[in-house]
Image 1 (cartoon, one colour):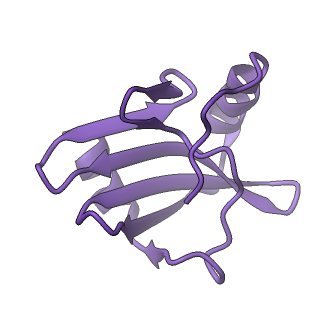
Image 2: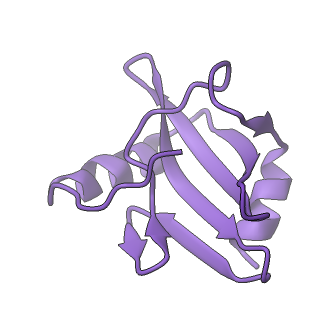
Length: 104
């Protein structure tokens, strides 16, 4: 999963609009090499799945959340790449599982 290091200033309105207008949301989980779990909420836009929310639960049980409101910090950031569940190592999860972690 690619995480953005720096972003164009106009990405926040785009991501906010996707988040606020989405009628279909997809939720995934991904385990990383360090033992952390990534939880992803993505929405379709122009034939791609765009990540609008992403939470990392580290192996040390620290939670880092990223969205249009908080794109990045010293630990990482919201991916700037569209995802492909058929190509990326993602597991589909229920929305409730994503929200349980996101609101923790």
